[in-house]
Length: 192
Image 1 (spheres, rainbow, N blue to C red):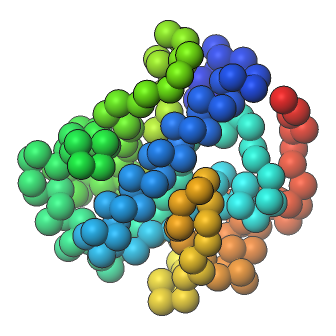
Image 2: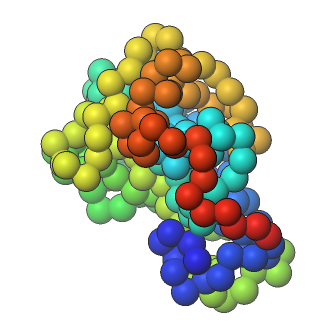
């Protein structure tokens, strides 16, 4: 079962749907962050997947950490009401969009406005596939701090999108903190 969609079995069709959705969402978020000049990295499960070089089939969301030093740029974007559901990026943000204090506490989520996928079932269309966008430090204990060198990011290709990760030694440190010393070894061996 998927992490956030426990009623959907993981198979070739469901995984293809989820990974295609996530790929489109990452591409759109990367464009948005580039346009407003906000630094970001893929994080948590996505960073783990990148570092392992293999998919985590049950991971059905995106995890993005943004640089809190860029908060004024992000806040300016969030002050424009029409940006909450923005067709230019095909992204809609949750109700924390206009409340930067709530975002400082626990981040924000977004989803695609529309997603056209050939042969998508009704169950797939109802899935909760989202991106968690969280500053590098927040007040919620749900999220660990992501203390990294924002000037030393590595540009990579992930999910067919040019995106960013922390430099290698920081990736290792963060993944060990988040998943333990054996982070590179998958806990589940799911095969399609």
